Length: 203
Image (cartoon, rainbow, N blue to C red):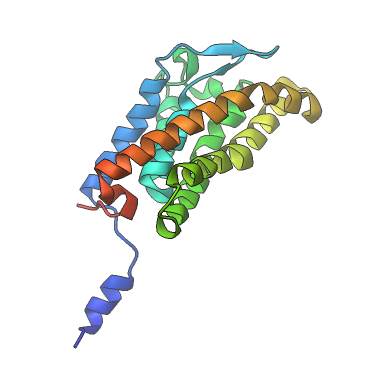
C-alpha cells in the first residue's frame, strides 16, 4: 500500500537542488561567453547581430522553462549590474536606454516560452525531435524576442513601430540559423545525457 506522504511527494513540484543551481550558473556563463564572438552591427541604429539569442535558445531547450528562464535572467541581471557581458563588451543600466534594450529584456521571457514548448515536445514527441525543438526555439524568437525588440527600438530610438519592424526583419535569417544550431546541439545533448530530456537533474 502506498504511503499518503509518498503520494504527496510524487505530486509535489520538483525542487531546485544544488545541481540545478550549478546548471543555471553554467548556462548563464555560456550566454556571456557567446558575447565574446564579435557582434555585427546591422541597420541604421546599429543593433548588432550576436550569438546571445542562440545561447538563450540553447539554454531553454536543454534546461527547460524554469531553469532556462532563471539562467537567462541571471545573465541579464549580472550585465545590468555593470559586468561587461552584453554585446560589444558593454554592461550597466545604460543598456536599458539603447535601441537593443527590448531584445535584451525579452531574453528571460523568451527562455520561459521556449523551455515550456521544448518540454512539451520532449514529453509528446519521440521522432523528429530536431524539427520540433527548432520550432520551439523559433517560438521564443517570434513570439517574444522580436516583438519586444521592435517595441524597444521604437521607444528608445523614437521611431515608428512600422520602421522598427522593417529594421527588425534583418535579424530573422540569422535567428533561423542560430535556432537550427541550438536545436542540433540540444538533440546531441539529450542523446548523450538523457536525464536532461526527462528534466530530472536535481541534487
